[in-house]
Length: 90
Image 1 (spheres, rainbow, N blue to C red):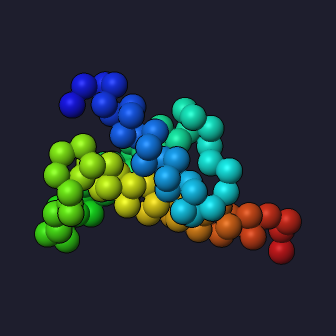
Image 2: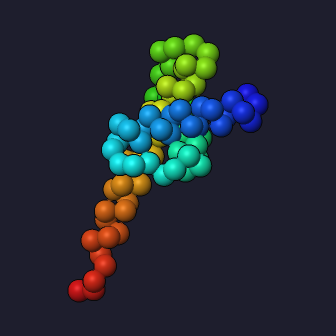
């Protein structure tokens, strides 16, 4: 895939994941980054689990990136909530 395709997949997956997880998203650049990182996480998850995308072509790539982006956003939310609870001392 060329760079424009990666940006498109990242944008679509990041925006959709932000809508599903809730929140305002991270802006266009942040959503692209979340989607691209999500594509890598989704690819690892699907490969390790032995799953395949339910769609072929670009739709399948976007689906896997979308699942990975949801996972990433949930992990970021858990990390953020666990670290914010520790502020303020003992």
